[in-house]
Length: 315
Length: 268
Image (cartoon, rainbow over all chains, first blue to last red; front, side, top):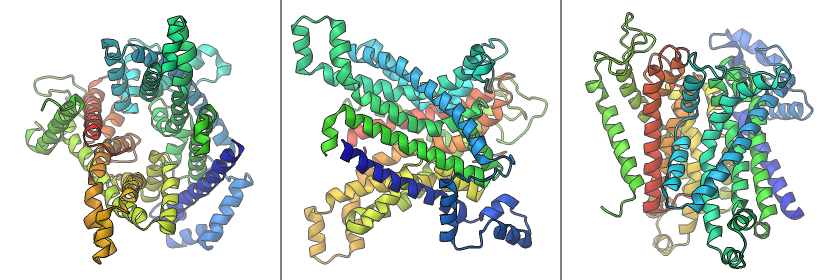
């Protein structure tokens, strides 16, 4: 196991370095330099050159890249151009909000999708199975912003008004307000994620239910409940747990759109703000962090899988 | 006929209707997509405006029909761009193997370790928001995934007898890759393409919804939904019309892709 972890860890470092290169290339090498991004397309050449010198953009690319990586690693993340605040403090708050949203969505998905998938697997071929599979298929096909706006229209409108139309309330302002602000964005993300988990639980459990050891358990007289919960789910859920970890990766992208729908102040909305305001220092840090979380989530999924299923480690 | 999976039948029916209606849109739309009827704002469906009107009094049916063209253009265009780059790269990596393959796959893996919407956003930041740039950004974001599938399938054929035979009779590398290997990788590419068109359409609509893709006053489903947000409690129709059209199209593409995968095999 240790060797496996070390090997995967080494490849993570390589991927993180490549990610930083991609971000650097996208911002510095594509047409339209960082200085143009900041000053706009109609800036005078003189102004551009002055700013480029201030930002060190007239140095060789490799030196610039080295300086940037050094700054990132030593925690000198600079100031946001549009907000006039240190990037680190802006990002810390937004990251916390997004993490709350992502965690809530994952918990809801786990609590709803695993029982649904189990029900579908136990009643394979029935009307219930068909209904569950069809509903989750539609859930994953409908774009997040359509689902979100639909929920908004039905549940947050003036006629019903159970939920606010957007925004965020800190837990310190009261648990009820906190839950009401989180509910709709969480539900939107959960509806999209549901399909993966239901499908995986259903097929994982269906595979296990046909195994000889389940028949043995039944034959020795174990109750149906015990057969399902203790014997079948234990093995059948292994791939489902990995799917949940991989979904954390999806959440990093999906969150951008959902946060925009509900005006939720998280990383996704911060990224859109940075793009709209051409705030390069803020944008590159945000994208780096989100991509790093995405990579680490995939890494965690691999580790979890290897830990739960020892056969993987010896490939 | 009878062995056709229902997913394929339903999916291809939805797609056929969507493509036909989009292509015919300029002739069947009752109004021009940008024609404003200032006194008829946010109206409910009526005989004059079958799906109602938006905040500028533009006919929602006409805009939804024309929006299908934008969605098709962006979805298909972006995947074609991805294929144009991804297929040669994947073929070369799988065919030559060794160092070139290692280097290419490292870059591909790094690009895949990025949520693709983020990659598109980075490119949009550098280029600026417009329809063409959205197409380019999503096309580029599609390259690594396509390259990886093609490379995997090529790798499996590298030592196949027909490939060795072609090389033995002195064919050049380019001919062997495109003339011998490519036709055999094609089924996998077709499956991959249908699934990717759905994702590309979704990504394009997402970018437009975020205000970073198609710009007003062009008719586009993502952009229409963005504009509907502000008025959604006054009239649901500006959301419902493009929302249903976009969702149905994506469902159709997914069903079609899944059905095709069951039929042809391949993909991943």
